[in-house]
Image (cartoon, rainbow, N blue to C red; front, side, top):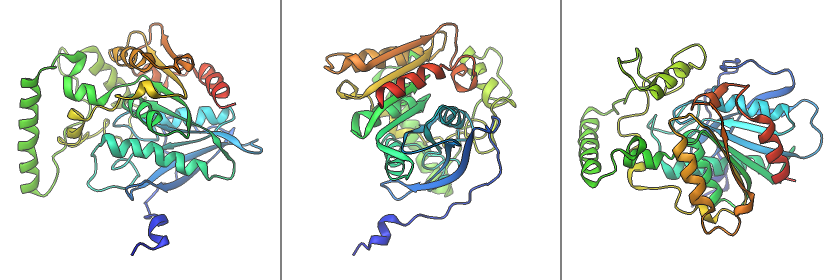
Length: 337
């Protein structure tokens, strides 16, 4: 028999209390660590940012990403900056990564990671200083795609920003720029991944897939250099970041290959702002996601695609002169009014 305590019990996590972010601490907000539990019983760790001059119920935002990053990187910067602008915010580590729970480590799941966003909405909905009718989410990189999926599923989400987004199901199934979009190529990928499962089972551990290449291989494409410049340098390196270190497990993203997450985005009724750098290698994800989202959608009027001239993928991770925070603030105030 399930007891009431079983439903709300939270596993204790080992949370660092020191400021170990890749960005300076703001004097305009209060910060503390919090935890909450998702529907699969995994306890998630988050940083909560609240304006020091906060009064009454505030619009609230949950932030996550990039894919393979931790809350001390870009997500925390977004959350702290939006808190400076009057929002109650959290930046959280997704299941199996960072300071959040989940065993085994360094696995990803289209279902569970969408649920992570919904669990963040659960948490924000019951906070004393948050207005449960004014909740939005921000997803960065691969979490931009996850945010759109969450918005298509969760009617409590009233506004969504997807920044420099990836569709992780598309890139896993079709490769970069859809260059591997064939049944034969997918079959060979699946064979290799299933062979790795046997090796992992025999060894009793999961082989790491490797993070961002370091040193950079000769002739590396620009987007690999772009990632290296963020994850492998003082600019964005973090000791708990998968991309900065050993990466996802080899089989960590296996299920993304045949579980597309953006099938019902044209049923999203709430407001959506998709932001991307015009020069980013990943810009095609946002352009196509926007086109699919507004096609035959009677609620297309509150959807917007914003392209940043000259910006590349990681510019929207941490470049304060590039990330359009003014636009985001205006968007959320309008959508959550």
